[in-house]
Structure formats: structure tokens, C-alpha cells
Amino acid sequence: MNKMKIEILQLIDGARQARGLTVIIDVFRAFSLACYIFDQGAEKIIPVGDINMAYKLKEENTGFLLVGERNNRKMPGFDFGNSPFQIRGYDFTGKTVVHTTSAGTQGIVNAIGADEIITGSFVNAGAIVRYIKSKKPDCVSLVCMGYSASYPIEEDTFCASYIKNALEGKDTDFEQMVQIIRNSSGKRFFLDDLQEHCPSEDFYMCLDLNRFDFVIKAFKSTDGLIYLKKVR
Image (cartoon, rainbow, N blue to C red; front, top):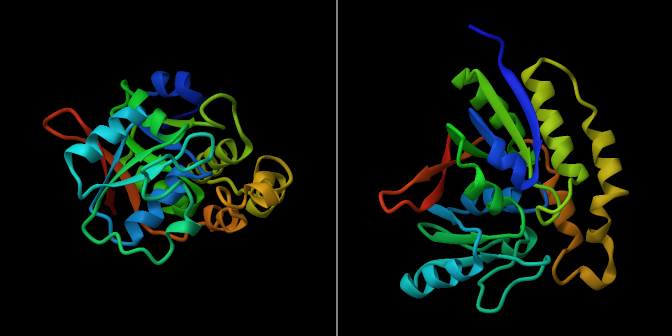
């Protein structure tokens, strides 16, 4: 077997370049939140890039829940924003969630060349590594979606490095990563005027390393719609 080729890519262009088994990474907060939603019982998540599509799906399926953000803020008519802390305790059992964000969901819909797509975050990083090892792909694309898919950001690039290092048998100083994130891209979670949309609890919930033992995989339905399911 050839050595696994692992490539770290950035933003929407990176998603479009992704090949092989592709991990779309959004630590703050889309794919950390998705893990919490599945852990709280959701049946599936439909990731959409276009917010009008999200509203349309809700209109056609009144039982669906709308979750997500633009510019960190919950949109009108949405059930929840993009905050893991703010969904705590909610029973998602059997629910279908329509999820649209500025970064992570954009990566999924743009990874058109990928053989297989799973989501990436620190809260299930160990499960991601085990899953990739079990699949033994020739090529792995780790796509960092950055801030609003507009520029690279520390936590996503660090998450990609963490996964790559683990696949290559190398150690990572995770605590040092956390400190760097706390003093850079994570600062917004500690600003008083952003607590309504970016509560400080989200910082810790999104960096709770290996909290979950499952991966989230993208599938395509017969009508062409992409949906996410929890798999082990």
C-alpha cells in the first residue's frame, strides 16, 4: 500500500481542490456544534450554503429546525444560532436540523471532487483519526474553513495539524494550541458585547478534545440534497 498522502487546504478554494477522503474543518463553531446536536439525539443535519434554501426547506418541512448564523448572529426565524452552549439541554431526538453558517457548511457544498466527506473539529478529533486509519485512503484532504470562509484562522489550521500529526504518529502540544487560540481568534468569545451571540462557554465546549467518539459523514439523498449522519 502506498503511503497516505495528507494535504492541508484552506477555505472554499481548498474545498474545491479537495480529493480523496476529505475532512471539512470548522472548530468555531459549526462542526463542534454538529457533534453536540447529534449527541442530543438528532436524526440528521442538512448543511446548506444558501440561507434562502434553509428558509425554503423549513417552509416545506415545518418540523425541521433551523440552526446557524451569519456574522456570528442567529438569523430571523431560526430556532438556534451557532452556539453549542445555547442548545444545551434541548432534546433533538429524531429531529432533522437545517444548518447554515458562514464557513463550515460552505465547505461541504463546495467539496465536489471529494470521494467521501466527514466533518472536522477537536471535540471528535480522535474518532476522526481512527476512522481515517480504518478506511486506509490513499489521499486525505484536510480543509480549514477559516473565519467566515474568508481568511485562515488558528483553530482550524491547528485542528488540521493535530489530525495530520496523529495520522503520522507524531505528538501535538494541544494545550499550547489552546493558549494561542485563546489569545488570537478565540478572543471574541470573551468580549462583553458579543456574549449574546458568542458566549464564552462556546470556547471551552469547542475545545473539549475528544469529547465524542463518533464521526459525522456526508451523504447524498436521491434528490441530490446533502445530509449529515453520525457514524462510528
